[in-house]
Length: 155
Image (tube, rainbow, N blue to C red; front, top):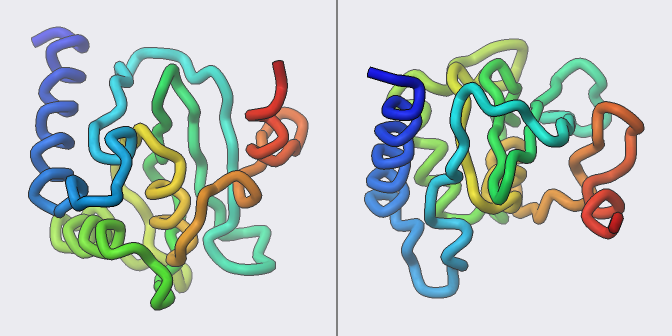
């Protein structure tokens, strides 16, 4: 099986999980419900980080923006205490990841044990923060520490 075949299978599985978890609910954009088409060997265009815990420099999550999607990287730390504002679809995804042991306890957070592809920043950011989030103010580019919102406005 080639790397391309593996990527296609991952995409198909992610699409099935997204539909099973209700990511096709009315009001959700199509961008949030389809898996990102990201090949595992494709180099990231831009990398970002954020903190899973408020005012913490040690509990980081990492996100690569690749093509039209983004990948939340394995070993990212996820806030262990979601708030009521966490969207229902992300809450369901989180529960599924815990059940699959893809989120495991570590340092007062949950550690992601595999890369997760998204086509929208919002669910990726909400998963990490444990609350509703667009991600524009939360993620910081690793190379120059610019906020994602600023980066998206660049020509």
